[in-house]
Picture 1 (tube, rainbow, N blue to C red):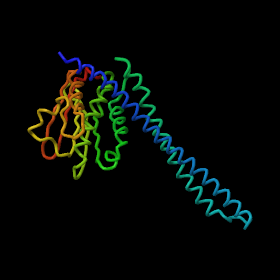
Picture 2: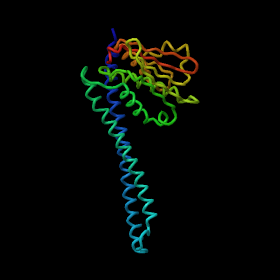
Picture 3: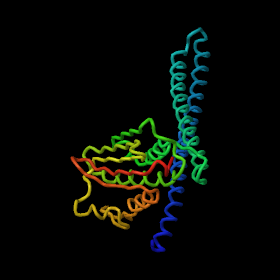
Picture 4: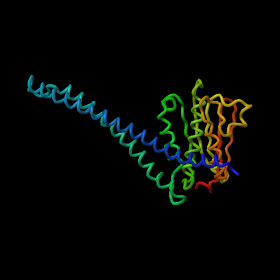
Length: 261
């Protein structure tokens, strides 16, 4: 039987996962708002300059064509700004479109359908708040086309992916060529998820401890991410394994499709 502290900690961790998702979404939306604010300021400045150019053109040389090159340049800059704003709008719409079904799915056991790609993409977007992850790590995501929709345990899948990705990012911070690969596919009635990284891996003498609570090779780390990832996987009737070979560290999660689809 699990100890009382373990059950309480696990329950709080599940709530924290939902809170982390919300904070990540708010972070992304805040970035969108900042971009809109900046573009609005630039628009105001540009319109002011355009008015001056037109006024000077009309006063100095009322003939046709006067001042048009400068005006044309300003309008071209405006076109670039419009494209940037449209891109940010699409980002905001995409994030909101994802969180609405997630908010419904995570409160009910059945009745919702979430593609695994949605879960993966949201985790990747949230982690992109880390500049090292966003700019320094070469990232590859390979999801099989025949994956079913996730109907259960979506919060748990988020928590598992976050723990594995966060662990990989930490391992890659001192790697000369940091690279991360996430793949998912069907395998004999199971969902198979693999997270690879090119980090240094874990000393062989410590591999038996990596899923133990409060064990970590990182200074200041709490050491519960992999432990709780395994607890989530086990609760779904699955397994999680660690392997290291030829410069590649890999965590493999295997859960029955019947548990999630």
